[in-house]
Length: 251
Image 1 (cartoon, rainbow, N blue to C red):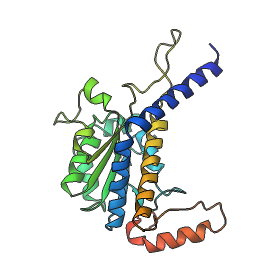
Image 2 (cartoon, helix red, strand yellow; image 1 turned 30 degrees about the vertical axis):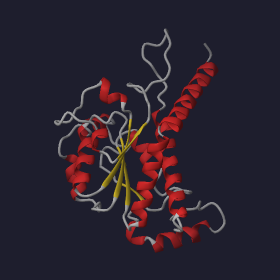
Image 3 (cartoon, rainbow, N blue to C red; image 1 turned 180 degrees about the vertical axis):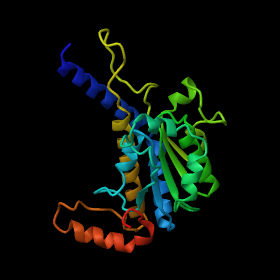
Image 4 (cartoon, rainbow, N blue to C red; image 1 turned 30 degrees about the horizontal axis):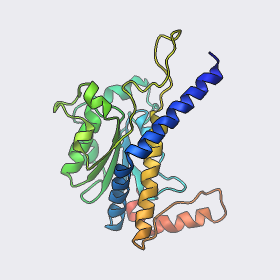
């Protein structure tokens, strides 16, 4: 089988998943977008968190041209991406009890804010505790996860629960356990993960919905423009000045 054919199969698999989430998660996307719009309109702040490769989708909505300027990254040292050495440390930290509480205690998150938590499996201590503790603070939580893990794996949190059990809105990415879309008899392990493609698309759909919801209320969505278009820097300067108390990555 040629590499080109495998490439096409991956595109087909990714497109199929995108069509599923478009059709099956439409109500959840609308609810999540409205939740973010409500938070913005009520003066709250927006945050996104993800560990490991789940952090890629979270980072994709922060300081992003065409995105909401108020979306801040809630970073946990050692688990954001694969920039820590050894890379396996990030996976280990996801299972550490109490880490989420320590992070939230030193973060600006508070009552009336909204937090998007991205975790493919939703089974590790960090995302579960992050959702639990955030809601206890009065923060509304949107979880982006694969619900399949909750039925096919065991939780690694002492409560036996998953991320999906502690969210105001859950977006199901439909990713199969193991996050690999292709298999060959000649290859000993499944390969070609699609979770980043699908999760990033889900979150951008939520951002678009939030912007539209704000506009419907007669409120200008606090959107950023590309710095590579004429007037982009001036536009962004105005937005960041107007919302400076709710944008933390600029300090």
